[in-house]
Length: 351
Length: 136
Image 1 (spheres, rainbow over the protein chains, first blue to last red):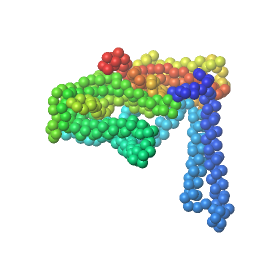
Image 2 (image 1 turned 90 degrees about the vertical axis):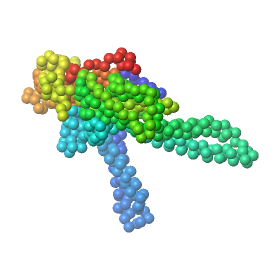
Image 3 (image 1 turned 120 degrees about the vertical axis):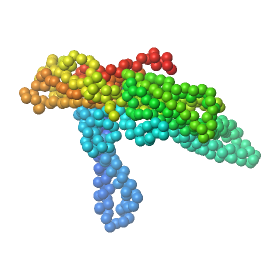
């Protein structure tokens, strides 16, 4: 274990430079200090208010008083919770802490609030995927995220950047008309305006794409899925595009989240991809969506869906399309795969 | 001197299926009786790979000196539990899920010693990296 601090590199994971016990003691002392500061400050505030009762000039009142109470009470609470939490961490192994959490989640009150089925822990609940009946098949799958949401940050950036650009442009223009041209501002403005115009072009392209590539709908005959199970899927693609190619895929992705210093990073990796359907060279006209259906089989030995705090195995149906004059698009529809029944027949999902 | 912790699965299997009963025996040697403060035995899954480790305890037991007649925690003990439906053992590319029996011995001088005995739950095959790269 390295004994020197690396100044310019964020540490990844939970490796430590130094003693874990000393670190925990330091955390407990810091939390205790916060608690004491909050306690002393709150006590002093209350004492001052009581001692100066009747002398309005010396007492605090209104927003100022409540703000101080809030700040001091927050310090008290954070310090107290920090001390208790650190002591619990010190005294208990990681397995014991996990067991405490498991017992807490088994309490009836909390069990009702947690959507995860207790007989299939770490498998996401499928209530959100089966609450929308399909028109052709049993269930209509929700899209992972709507492409319209991607427009909002782009629009916000466009507005802010070009707003600032217009102010700077007016200032530069004024300097020229006043006979005192500001060359520094003018030279700075050239690349700034270029970025602004580029952001407008990008936003308009995204908007046109959203308008021309209409909603994508995927329906499935049954859910959740089982390894080895056969299912029907129905695809509908609306819009006004000249399609070069459209594919429907069954995809399995692994996702891992890790801490690197104060950064949180996520890495995804596709570990399985099965083409279900593909068609090329056709037109989609307004009001006449492209529709197709097909059957597929989940691999016999497929890993079930899995989700924990920092790791996940996710299955999804993916529609990947390419159209003339537009960038390629990809829309994902999550599905959940349960483990199949074992040989002894005592486990596995059954309807 | 470090204690010697022996952990053995009763039926000698390494591959289990959901619903199977896991029976495991463990005992401590190589350390004086009064050196041991507590023992914890657990059946758990944990993740490995790129992501931060997640852990889930399926079965847990803890024994302290005060609970045991004679105060000797070194004796042979057995734990038995019915294995759950999920998560199954999995060897992926960036995510791995492993099951094990873990025994942790807490010593009087503040140290703790851990031994774990892995086993496989389910028969999901490992993801083959070459196939994944070819598909990409």
